[in-house]
Image (cartoon, rainbow, N blue to C red):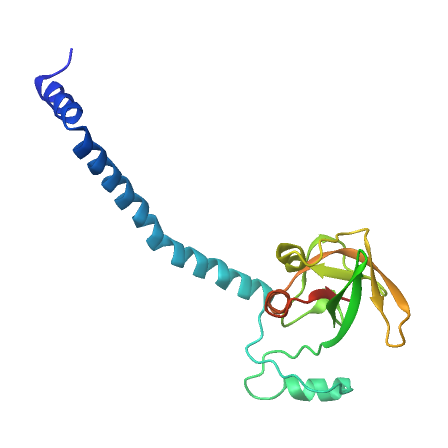
Length: 190
């Protein structure tokens, strides 16, 4: 048995269908728009977590290749306001993806187990050994290279020789992923 007020409400809603549809769609839009206020906060929180997990560097200094001794690295780390120093070398190269040549950047990591800044985290596969590489996860996300553990990527050496590099898995690093997106290069960690 329906109450009189419920019967009247149903009658009013069914009698003025256009107004009912407009009201319902307006309320649905209002409820959905409230969720848009949460999106920036959620994105910011996720980004902060990624920055903390990757120990993103505050300052990066790029220079010509320079051999530094352990004492010199310790002296740099001992400077005021320096929390950590992580030397990295990178080499721009050409690699074969199928039959096509593509630009790549090989980034050297001295010790994957003891990284202090701009950490390269292994997402799948294993930590690369000598002669192996990790492909950055953004390589696949951008559509440049979707190789994974067990694959082999071929790089062109300085004198044109082909160097086969087994892929140990996929890795993630904010600076490396940025290079993939900004410069359209395949980023590999070795």
